[in-house]
Structure formats: structure tokens, C-alpha cells
Length: 358
Image: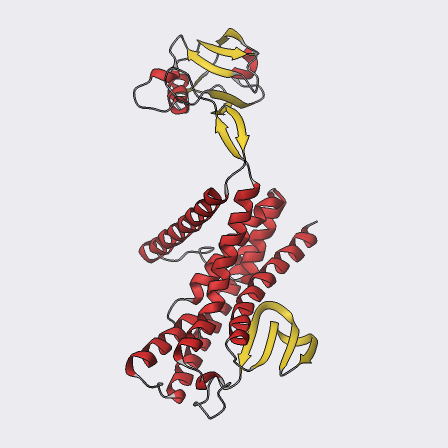
């Protein structure tokens, strides 16, 4: 099964990279650029063919891809279909299209997950409007299990004290606090099948935590489910991506503050390992990992660093401002240095991934 998950993880990564290169390719085709080569992966070609003026290939190592335009590193010539003969705005769109497609893919995946997932509508207390606590699970051999508490029981009171009237706390938090401070023995009032029952809880006090622990997981009672609307799915998808960006920014801020440690940054190998771990726990969660990866790839490529799409976009912005292209040789040298630095980073990260695996 692990081999299957490895294959699935590699295919997901390959698809995400393909979507990035497809953005460059599609924009280039629509805007009249001549495309010499479009390939998925790098290394020796496993499958290749030529259609029209473009060579297509699937290469042996799936962690990469390329969309090569005619005349990318040359001065503009009379041929209007060469890359640098095109107006700045067209070149900007073609380069930006790759990261944009990754961000769009992340949004579309999140959208379809949300619109296909019903919304839980929680039951509320008639008097307070607060959520009704329900027992989700009961630990074996805990105090709650010994007292006969069952999943699905509704929690009404602890020693006669209702969780619905505890200041400004939610009923769930209030219930946890009431149980935690109830002592070794207390009465738990529940509702089961419409009947109110008082359960005597014994041996609940935990010396280590200095609180009462009865061994249950509590959540809000779900009254019904409803399908998400189109608008709610759009807004929810955008919010989800924004939260990922915020969490990523916070993680980078912590790395700059506290230093980079083993496992903080992963390359392709480490990413596959993480995806395999996630799949072994719950294969459906690979969808959420795919959202994070494709969004991260899109945003990473927008960083204004040489050899990345963001670096090339920066050169185009400078060209638009000064009204003429920068020296192609200088631009080529800068991009080559940036590419060497990226390859060096990839080697370091890959070594780190291998150390983490073993």
C-alpha cells in the first residue's frame, strides 16, 4: 500500500507542476508566441513527439517541467513571434500565467471540496441560543465509561450546574471547566432518548493534572446538514487560501526569528514523504495537502528572485519603467546565478529530506 501512496503522491506533484507549465503554454499560444518545447519532468525523455512547431515530452524525473519559448534569452528581432519581440504586457501575462494557474488550481480544488461537503447546522439551547454539548466518544475504562455514559448523550448539567449560564463562555468550554473542577465524585445530568438521567461519576480526579478527567470527547450536537451555496463556497475557498498564506507567513517569520531547524523546509522528496504519511492516516486528506502545495508553488514562484517567475516579472517591470530592455547578457548572468543558487538549495534540502527519512 505504501508503494501505491508513493505513486499517488508523485502523480499529484507532477500534475501540479504540469498545471504551472500549462499556464505558461496556454497564455503563450493565445498571445501568438512560438513555443519550441513543452515537457513534463526533466532528464531523459520517456515519450516525445512533435506537433506543429512544438516538441512535447514526458521525461524520467517528474519533479519539474519546462515551457521553452523561441528567443527568450535573445534580443528582439524582426520575427514578431519570438519572445523578446513581443510587447512587455504580453510577456508579463505569459510569465505570470504559471503561478496564477497554481493559485487558481488551489482555489478550484478548495471550491469543489466545499461545495461537495454539506454544512453542519448545530442545535442550540432555546433559552440561551448556545450549542448543546453532545458526547462524541467515551474512552474505555475511564470514569465516564464506568458510569455508563454513551456516545450521543446530551450533557445538561454537572452537579446541577448548567453549562449554558456560565458567564460569556461557550457551553462546550463551560462544560469542560465544570467537569474539570467537579472533584473526585459528582453527578452528571444527561439526556438520552428524550429521558433525563443522573449519572454518578466516581474516581474522576487526576493527581497529575490536578483536575477531574472522565475520558470523553464532547462536541456540539448536529441538528441537520445543508448544502453550501455557490457564493458561500467561493467565499469559503478564498478564506481558506488566505488562512494558508497567513500560516505560511507566520512559519517563515518564526524561522527567521528562531532559525531553521531540521524538517522546517522540505523538497520534493520530503513532500512525497509527508503525503504518504497523510495518505496512510486518511487518504482523503491528500486533497488538502494538494491545495497547500499548489498554492505554495504559485506564491513561491512570484518571489522576485532571479530564475524564478517573480524575478523575470521584476525585469519586465523595470523594462516597462525605463522604456527599454535591460542588457540581455547581464539578465542572463543574473538568472544563471539565481538558478545555481536554487539548485544548491535543492541539494541541501534534499539531503535534509534524506536525513529526516532515516
